[in-house]
Image 1 (cartoon, helix red, strand yellow):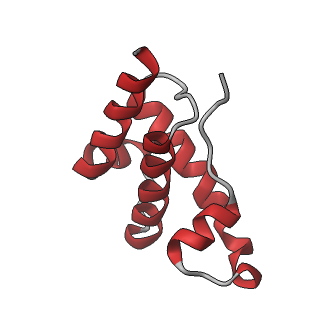
Image 2 (cartoon, helix red, strand yellow; image 1 turned 60 degrees about the vertical axis):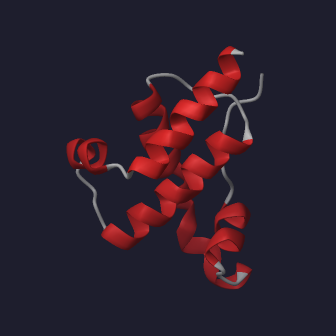
Image 3 (cartoon, one colour; image 1 turned 45 degrees about the vertical axis):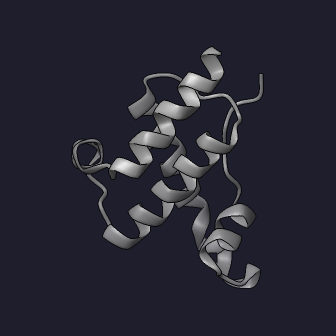
Length: 93
């Protein structure tokens, strides 16, 4: 089972950022993976829902500038929570 993750290229494409301007996105990719894993309380398997949760989380983190882990968990958008739950259900099936 492959662990869910997103790459800088994935995030740049999702955000519409040119690849040459994407070098600053790596921390967002890592933070999104950490947030989704923490919310899910487990490492998610690679799936479309897990990837979508991480992409949405990365964009949300970039837009809000939130860095406090507790605030991240309490303010995580409902759409991200939905994709996390969907990814968990898909892995359990």
